[in-house]
Image 1 (cartoon, rainbow, N blue to C red):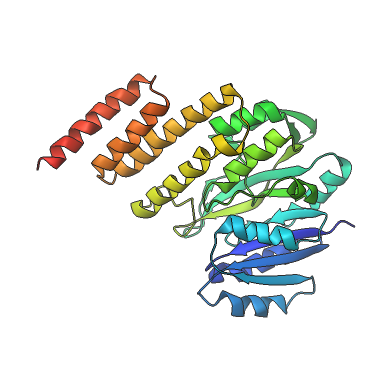
Image 2 (image 1 turned 60 degrees about the vertical axis):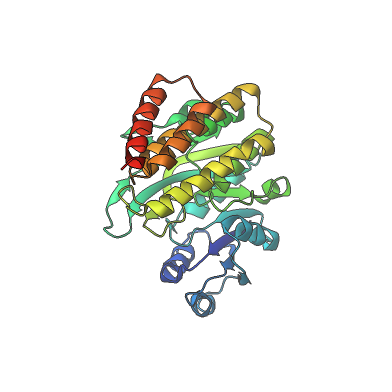
Length: 332
């Protein structure tokens, strides 16, 4: 019976830990070990973790480290893992009971697969309202990942790595660590890049380019809880522009590093520049900095976007309007 190593990085998530333990204990598949990496918490998490550990019979290892970010914490957990498969649990999310069992059944049936992921349901933690029923669909329509994959049994799709690489650059393949289970062999080839935000986007590209055999199951097994303390995914109506702008800067930095960390084709490089231009122009400059009346910063970010991809007329129109607003503000 295959052992699954569950790696749970946590930083000041004390209020979520009891729920995390319950979600893991409720898994139908019982042959697992839990490796918790406390990334320098200061909220009393360690005392609660010790208490929770004593309440379950499965092996639990708790590691403490100075705060270094989720990538370092996950890589530390990987080094400690002894399982045949590795699953990542984000402490403020939860798994449905069949998350691990479906994974092991699929890996057993298709032994060449190395990476399997599932859909997430996005829920507003404060209200309990569903934001998105499935991360694999937008407004009821299937996302791009279905068009770059081959169905190999009902609800199971195997990705075409070449097409998936381009899709990941352009819009994403709807995968992350929290909804993935990996063969331990993957981490003999790759480690998670050391970024605090965006490390998952970069890792996905590296894995696809490496030829890691990847599939997804069209079923929700993970509930992603959206709240203002998410490290990179705040509520859409959050007014905490300082945090949102900082997160977007870090996300852009991780994608910028792709040029040096991943061996991209010229076509992939062009698409990455286009994607970065949109991140700089629309997401950082227009949506965040301009909305928070940081006109000069917005102009600067928009210009960076234009330099990366200067071929959109709408860029120039918006840039000129924003530049005029910034000039007027500076004169008063």
